Length: 109
Image 1 (tube, rainbow, N blue to C red):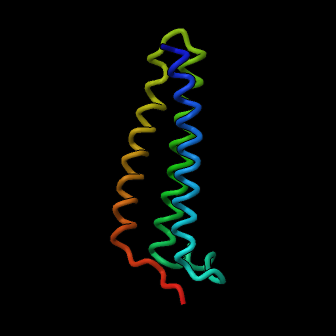
Image 2 (image 1 turned 60 degrees about the vertical axis):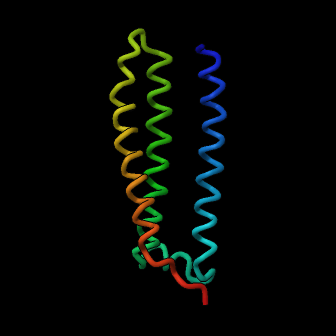
């Protein structure tokens, strides 16, 4: 069971990175290419996208932290605090995803 979980975790990490990269790329390609940095900081859509990317990175870090704590600790319950924080952060990611669908996408000129 532990070996299967370890294999799943590696595949899940690669898939998380791929989904994140393609999602960011898909959002950025909708923005005018010469104003991407301005669009990310000056529009509501860009700020929500940045917040979502930062939260996804935080979720990945929390998952890694929980995995390390689970692997090193004698008591598996020591991984509960980062796992709980990860669940909260994932809830915020879902909320930001919903917000991104409601915000107007910057128009490509």
